[in-house]
Amino acid sequence: MRYFSKICYNFLMFSDTHFHFRHIVRDRGLDGTKILSALAERNTFFALDIGTEADDLIERHSFILDALEKLSDDEKSKAKRFLHYSAGIWPSEEEIAEREERVNILTGKIARFEKSGEKIVAIGECGLDHHWIQNEFDEKTLKGESELFEMQLSFAREKNLPVVIHSREAFDGTVDSIRNVGWNCGVIHCFSYGIKEARIFLDLGWHIAFGGATTYAKKSKMDEMKELLRFVPDDMILLETDAPYLAPVPFRGQTNTPILVETVFRFIADARSISAENLSEIVDKNIQKLFFERT
Image (cartoon, rainbow, N blue to C red):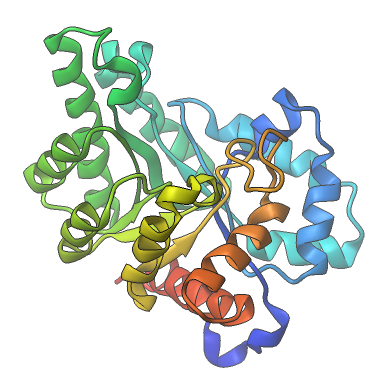
């Protein structure tokens, strides 16, 4: 476990709290070793590889192990310190339909992972996505989606772990599920709502994470976006890429990587009228509190 009393902030830069390494390497064909080398060079404090499927944890880990093997000893040592893992089930139609079996698979994979000496630091990403399913699936499926989400919230509560929540066009349902389980520990990733919704999540105790999509706001909406970016208090903000998706402007349309989180930091720091380096210190403190100081 890391403690900030032993760390000089000047040498820790631009953590990424949400990316999908396997998709970056396997699906987009990028060199994972070069990415990890770049993160090691800038002394990244924290980089979180996110799960989306019940049985993806071991395979995801193998992609990172392969990339680590090609690093220098110093780079490898640094990368092993900053790399961390979550495990969770994104609400796809298949996962929803077989939710009890899939949650059992998820818990089994986590147990196997931890038996090998590794550790997950969060459950997720999991949650509700009504952008894709609101007009396609029936009420039974929507109910099953909420049940799948609540099963993972309950498991996180049992494990005393934070949850990485995916919530798209599903604010009311997300809040209802959180309240049903009564576990308020984690982050609303890739936040896509407004100040009203942010206030409710914050009051419940949830961190808010922003990524490259914040740079997409049209000129007429940019002031509103910057107001939201300023609204979230220092002790509740996190930053991410969601790589390989949502590369920030001016890289929009390209494959995103954790390296580009620096662009997100600089954009949001400007909106908050602080330096990117100061924002990096703030975010790392929040990471320490959320992921490593669980009691």
